[in-house]
Image (cartoon, rainbow, N blue to C red; front, side, top):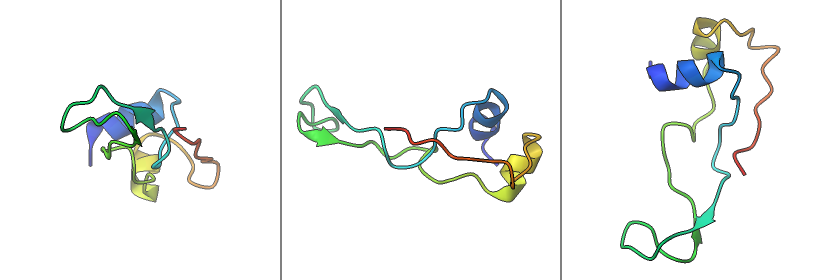
Length: 66
């Protein structure tokens, strides 16, 4: 389990998913066109992650990263 994901959930930041695009600075790994960087917050939290963070999975409502 990724501790950053658990901390994010405990802190009340429920933003997960593939939303959140930006125009980069023009480097090879961050082009100027609109794009998304995949990271550990793309995948939605599992029930185990939610329960570890003290959140009832039935109460969890994901918020878009857009």
